Image (tube, rainbow, N blue to C red; front, side, top):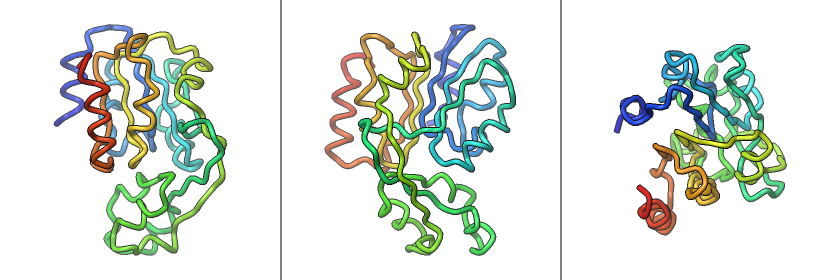
Length: 196
């Protein structure tokens, strides 16, 4: 599936609002970056917990007032340990894929499962105060969502399940299902089926 194609096909609102949870740097592997640049009235809430990626995200989008940036992780609102890969890994590991820095997760084992555990010495952790999705949307005064995009390395269902579909009814929901359990996959399909 090409998310960029579907966004451009389905989103006809000239003043569209996009909410992206797990924005990384806003460019690498990002299906919305170019669309946001090409549509000067589209707005976005961009959320990224890893500090160095958050700074790159802000830099890549610049000072455009259409974009709001939140350096946070969305979960059930509890304090939690969040894991990410130190950028030093790129300098020290030959042939490291470009997406190594997209592996930030609440699950350390998720990162270890990639590249036969070679990233273990580069895994960093930080304790964070998580935010519930409804609290984030209320705080940022999001009153409509045209595209809801989640890419959170296995935490996607936990976030998607907090979205009030009756209130927001996004035209398009994009989430990474590859790392969901069978139960989470079934729950996400059941959650979305009545409306999508």
